[in-house]
Image (cartoon, helix red, strand yellow):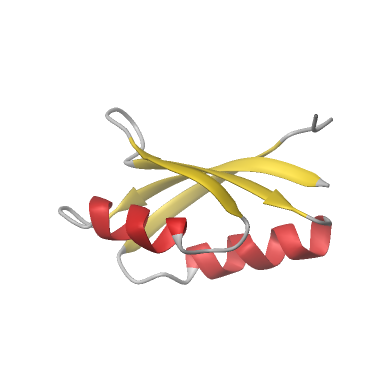
Amino acid sequence: MQKGFILLNCDLGAEEYIVDELKQMQDISNAYLTFGAYDVVAEIQSENQEAFEKAIATIRGLSQVVSTMTLNVLSPE
């Protein structure tokens, strides 16, 4: 299993839309609105690295996502 987090910056006012979209994705286990350097933090759990990378690519392709940072967990539980 591959686990990680993606931190997102969104267009102003699109944060709730992005969280709703993320929560509908199969590989997203949690998505949160945040205050600070990033607008949204999402937790990803995929079967393998290929599925993990596909989920990241899908997220980056969402409209109103401005930028992302991906954090891979080295040894998932």
